[in-house]
Length: 279
Image 1 (cartoon, helix red, strand yellow):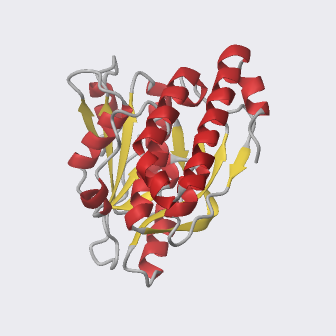
Image 2 (cartoon, rainbow, N blue to C red):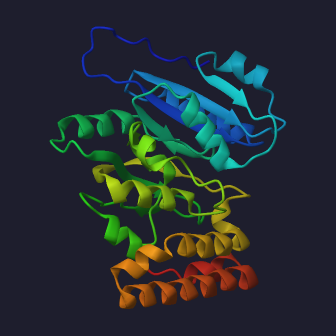
C-alpha cells in the first residue's frame, strides 16, 4: 500500500501542489496514475481523484490509497467537468492535471516548482516539460520547448502536448477559468492558449511525464477530433482576424488540412492518419 510521505514543517518554500486525476471506468490505469503521483520526490502534495459516475468501487480505492481524496460525480459529465470539479476542490498553490491513463515521473513536481521559484518573472503562470508518448504503440519523445510570451506562436501552431506535462499556478485560473466543457478534443491546447494570452510560460528541459495508449483515447476518435477542431477555430476566429487577413486565411487553410487528415483517419485507420503527421 502506498502512502504519502510526511511533510516536513521546517522545510521552506514548499507550497502545496494539488494533483487532479479525472477517471472513468479504468481502475487499472487509475492505480498506475495514482502510484506515479505518490512516487513524487516533492513531498507537499495532495492527490484528488474525481470519478465521472462510473462503476468504480471507491471504497476499495479508499482502503488501498487512504491518503488520496476521492470524489464521484452524481452523473456522467465528461473529463473537463471532472477536471474543473477537482480544481474547485483543490487547496494547492499549484495545480497538476493527470489523466488516469498517464504518468508522472518522480522528479516532475520538484523540478517544476524549482523552475517557478528560481524565475525572476512575476508573470510566469505555467511550467511544462518534455514527455514520452506511447499512444501510437511506439515511444516518441515530445519536446515542449516553450518559453516567455508564446501566445502568437501557439495561435498559429495549433498544438501542445500533454495535460499532465503542465504545472500551473493556481491563481491563473482566477483569470482564465478552467477547461472548456463544450470542447470534445484538444482541451489542453485551448487552456494553454488562454493561459499564454495573459501569462508567460517556461519549461524544464527533461522528460518528466508519460502518455500511455488506451483503447478509448480521444486522440483516435476522429469524429471528436473534427468537432473539437471546428469548435476551436470558431472560438478563436476573432483573434485570427485581429492579427490580419493573411493570418486568418492561413488558419482557415490549416483547419481544412486538419479536417482532411481526420477523415483519412476515420476512413482508413490510425496508421494512415499517422502517415499524414509531419514533425
